[in-house]
Length: 341
Image 1: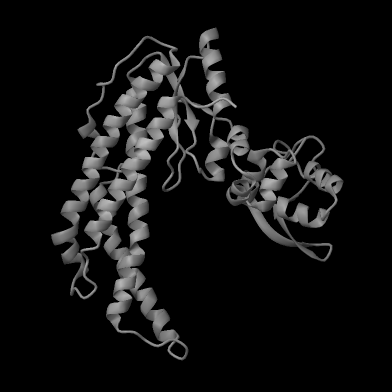
Image 2: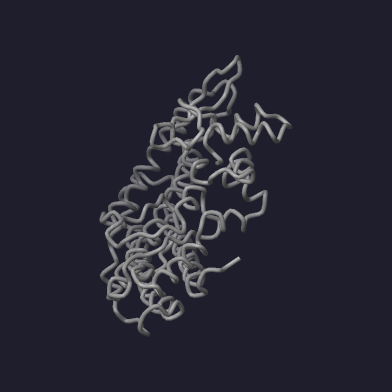
């Protein structure tokens, strides 16, 4: 199976390592929060905000520098344009804001409100369960609330830095006129939503769809109006296709990422995008006395495949349950509901 450019894989590893280092540093800063403090807001401003935001800003600079080097390296490796060198970005310009253009300071400060809300939720739960749960002192609940907020902070830090790296990627690519767009590259261990999008070509004016903590990246792509450009683009899209990512996973990993039923449907020949997108319109219903999962995705005249039944489609989970151990019936139902041709 073809492999991604070595420089692109290296870039993903470096960004992942940077995210881990920054996450650990901000964790240390947040650990200064005292559950017995009379004002978490005041303590955050006095002891946490300064070091945490300085660390994030420093990591953003490093992410932008890495992207500056990466884009030059991967373009030279792909060799579809003139040789190029890094040094086209001003890394400091990428600090202080998130991928949505919001100040990082304001986003991180929301962790205090998040912790306060978590404490109130724990307090209500503790009071409502006094018959079965021994009430601990408030300090215990406060400590748990601060600890539980750590996951929110981790996700925030990872998303900010991954977005910074992607913004720097795009800025560095835009400096090279022979780059007309990019191909999406999923990270190892990507979720099903990202795997469905990987390998697609996008122009510069198309946004990068991502979810919180998404670490997918760009592969610079050439103008496909030339023979050499088309050849390079086809190679990149083949390397990063959803099918290649699915095939690279073990069966256990396939079941974890796509769900056991969804993964089995794909192994039976179902289109990955139809399996994943079906979950957007999923609901439960009764059919012939049995509880089944249905979806309204890809059920319009434009969305249906030839031979697909009209109306809501059965989800792969219900198809497998209805077909039982009959592989022929499984294939028939997958075809009837538009998952395979």
